[in-house]
Length: 565
Picture (cartoon, helix red, strand yellow):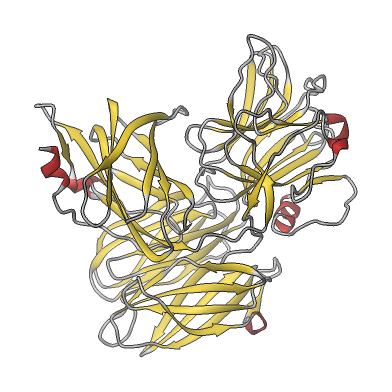
């Protein structure tokens, strides 16, 4: 019976690669998917899938493109941080690859499902499908196709190695830095610790000043929890305080993490990819008696009762320790800029050369691996306006390394060809924060649906692809759906998004932050043709850039929002 179920055809609810996100199938059982924007060939990634929980779950069927495989599947209950592995394996399939994963116990209620992916060859479009499985009264496993969901993603070439990064060899001790050679990390010190991290590991210790004993105070520890989030701890006997990212970092992509402490004002803050993620009130200096080394790649646990912790399996690059609290603007400005020169108050470890012996508490063996970290800024806010047979594209970026931006067009969303290019000097505007705006006008063909993306090229780096914009057009060439504006913009608490539909259609409008987390769903239903509006209330959200995404069967577009208090 299971074999016959596995051979049933599935109706795919496909989304082209976009800013981020997924599709909610019937009854909204599946929530957001990450990552979906862009993967790299021959690499590993984690997709994080939200299960609504109104229906119990016993397993998953996953259909992947040829050359892909599942490296593992884990389930984390709502509110939990422990990832429980599911039994997984490959099943007979046709042209693609079909995998099954089963839970030893029925999953009831909301869960986060983590799908470990081994990515195949580069392609402009790859489709992945997930179908939930539930055990019937007769004990046989059956599919729930009405809850099925799928998403598409671009797969770029394997990234080019640029240098070296830290990678802890299996079975080796963490890399131990002598705290006397570093800026102070005590409870009454001002400091900033930042680094780029890349991992798919769950429940692992990235760096630590703790020996694992409950009676030992410690000022700093970075952990990737079972939900893939980065958690920053500080502790004293019997008490651990933490800051955490809302979005996962264990997706197989590079992420910038920064922790700042300002004892004069009594705050520690956590930043992810340049944006504020969490904060913690610090009003004591009781952590000053810990002089243990700063361990990179795990915890240097000492004593029979110490918590060893799981060793870090990912990479770390551009580790920087400052003897002062860096402002948010300073963190954002320098995170994508190499710092080769000596800077007062900074200890930088880039790993392209051997770590200076004066920084280490003990000699270390080989702790390096090839690194593909790139400091490029991505293309954002790709949008389009149509008039007759002409499409005017606009996009934004802070990138100053590209030689040109190549505009690519497709009529099927899979095969793209270059239709033009724009040079950096041809920008149409530049904001005070360094964001540059570009535009390109395309004499588009008469096809009802067009797909556009931007390729960043040059600077001696591998090409980078933007998210794909999907533009549906009516018989007169006008867009079938468009976001007119949001007002006010910037806004302090709420803003109204005005949009238009050329025909009645199912509409899903959602808002995402820059880390790829969905923060609001504004519209989810069928609307008639004409003008519409939706109100976004951001009173509980931090200041920053957000993106509203409008998805219909014919269109997928985004619009940039700026929340400023």
